[in-house]
Image 1 (cartoon, rainbow, N blue to C red):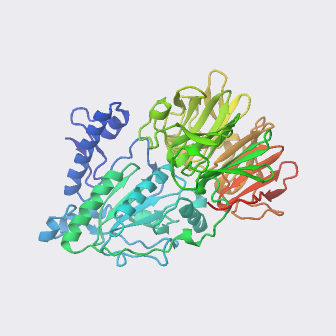
Image 2: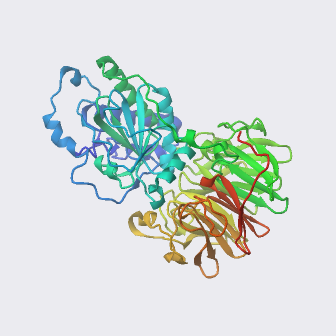
Length: 601
């Protein structure tokens, strides 16, 4: 069985290959329609990976489709942890017990020093503190959908090996806003992370370990020795096997510490609030209702446009239970769309679309299997087709368009039909204009329509895009970078007003159209931006560029993510401030929407 290898530790295993065709198993698995054949290929792949892991110092999987890792364009130091392997292999003396190790060729893990502070712990940790523990280091950045997809795997491993495993998050930021410790603190609470995190804002720890992509997971054994790494999402089973092997070996050797280490979680420092990280809002002037996705309370809140509480949907617990309002459950819902008396919800972390019957007060599942899609399918029957992080929904002439953040695509479902399918995006993560099939998107996260077009924001490409429904339908970029070589558009972010291609955003998450203008929630710039659809001119509507709470005089936001308009009032999900802000479009006056009677679930 042919395997591509390298003499350098940073590339010990790039991809398992079939002997006859030299085709990457990851690619063949992604394209395989037969569940039996897919299972067989996955088994072959794991055998190849772990056979080599025993004989090589490290392990790395290529990032499986659709979870491609994103390259960080930053030079590595002269000598990284990975590069030390070749020289150390020759000098390592193996004891009898060492030769029985499942990962015998090891070296001291680089220190964890060099960050700008630790979170979720009272003090910085070092390898002396972690002696006796299997340590899994997660190199991540909180904007990244692939990094988000790794978190449930880490939670699974932390619970399964609570007394033997410690996870250390190393937050090596992509966006400028993500370097801020307070922003990372909010992300830790929002993502419900329960392990220590280093703010690696200057990528010092990243460089020590020779990391090249998000997410990357490094394994260190109980003796503080670097074992290897895996890149990309979808590695739960492999990590489970690796951790189990290490625990078994070091328990027998007497080098395993099975006393739990207590941490000081950021979540315990945050006071309860009626709303917790609200992600999206939907205002309906006709019925005088406002729908709020109270994302971290796992529920939908309904009020009048003036803030009078009408109802709450969901019991507040994470789940995917259908039923009446009190029985139903969600998992961090985001976008919503109202069609008549039916509210459609992107139940993001359940990887489902939910349907709420507002008249009969019931919730049911419209589409998805409840499992994250691991391949880029074309679509299929509603309840048999796995989805991947649906983030926003918009209705146009009886068809729902869904921003599917995970595979970097837009999907569609004709209301009343039994199917759901891909609408636009090749699945490649980039900002490339073109036909619906050939265009490249980058984590679409917000949508809106007018009478002719669909508009959406690609958060990872910091771009505002358009699809004209008139033939031939194609994807164009109306503001922000586009069509740059080598994926450079993914790193062209800033805070620049201007026309079309000269304008720059920083991870926009929300968008709404009103009277020939697009209002954009420029989340990491903490601003609301405005685009004139006739001229293409981008300007700042509100916000200072710095996170804050002030609403009197100079208006401030903190990572606003959702927008909606009714009766010349702009409703803003001011996510990290845990509030809804209402702005009068005529005079730009702003106020917080107080919801009397709304309580923490």
